[in-house]
Image (tube, rainbow, N blue to C red; front, top):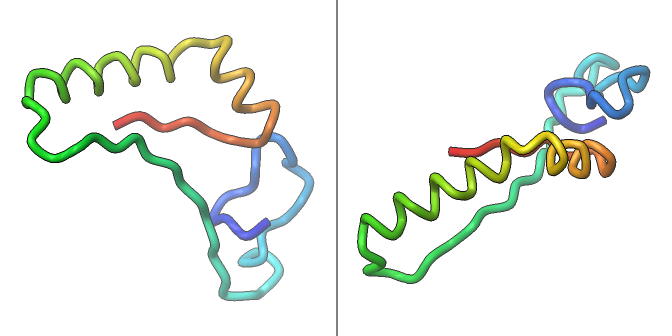
Length: 72
């Protein structure tokens, strides 16, 4: 595992840091919007995405592919 923490999907696999290698590689995804989107629209989009990411069914789907959704 190249992340800082062990994956909940693969808890028995140590990270490279745990094995003595100073390596951290992580990935992320983002939702982008064009410039000058009204702040109210961005706030609503952010709220809707956070609501979706808190849905247990969606979290289960992400967990099934070793992903941990984090809103913001």
